[in-house]
Image 1 (cartoon, rainbow over the protein chains, first blue to last red):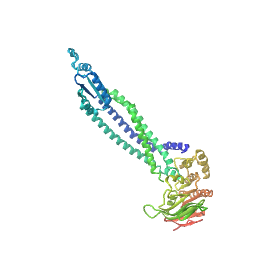
Image 2: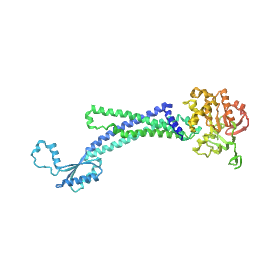
Image 3: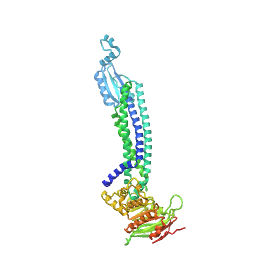
Length: 299
Length: 246
């Protein structure tokens, strides 16, 4: 392809946006509306998942050891778990003295003065935090099989609830996102199809004159990509400002809520939302125009 | 190969100067009688040919076959050495660049001006911009539209629009000009103007094939006339006449 033809093709794609104003506006509005809904839903789901994840991070397993087990042995178990168990996020060693100090502070207060020795001498333990609470039963089974371990304390109800909630969010959000995407693809490709169908004559003329399929298709594809790009950029900009203002508003007006809900910064949400939205918009613009023009090429 | 002949197809050798050959061509659609039925036709380089006949006689099907918009159900069509029954899809654009096409309804791009409509044909065949800037004004002058190159299509009369379509068809210097009812939407004065331009184009060496209903023009121009009826050629005469069958 000549360089002049290349620039002509790009130029025609851009000019087509203006030549078919209503089609362009309808396509951008359809893509924009679909991706706006998608973006809003994605932001909510991502935050909800973050809340559950934060709750999961607070769930720990406490491992107590047999009488007479030394600090070195406990630390050896700690490093073995850190090395060999990928589900472990963090392990904290709590010495017998630290356990007693914590107990005193929490339950006894000034009444602890009567104790001259540490009654929790065998209470040195490991606090284990997991990456994924659904892995808790497997890890507990493994730790219980270690011979120096006396007892493993865990909250099965919390772990199971969080794990179940996590799965539920994943399934529901995946389902809704798929439905939203399918509806978007259907609406957008219909708009693109209608827009190109009304220009069937133009395609026919090009074919009669001797244009190659590539030359006929290229301006439409450029146009489709541009529509997809603009259609995805607009909701991204709107959601950016809406989201930023919403989390600031909730943070200042509902302080109770903001202590429970830890909202993700907009940059974190956009790490994935930006490329996904652009890929969907541009992808649908490209595929929609590419396949629709093909239907009219056999002249 | 025998001197003066190109290739042997079926039982007949195609003479070197014959650029359109139809051998026993039949075109059937899914329902009804065939649109073309065993048609044989030979057109030489530089000829001016009228194809006439009533509606449903097969004229439009014939043009579509020559454009390779349709393929024959039976028989062979050879245009400029291309066998249109066997031509590969990717080679069709190259074949069509040898043809100039004019339609009854002009088929111009209404959102572009006169210059852009003609330049469009050159862009499609990837003519360098420098040449386009030279060729388009020249061809617009040939069809007497030099002063209207900036006009929008809807600002032109029917005759002017058809002249733009003619300029678009000619700008790539086609070997064959196919015109499907080029005067169908024009008044007598504009019709004559278009036909005179076509005659002039033909005198410069382009083979011109005109499908028409315009009896007055056909009878006045004294060119080869092929008359079709119900999918067959019923008459083919040099300096022929368009006889009313009824």
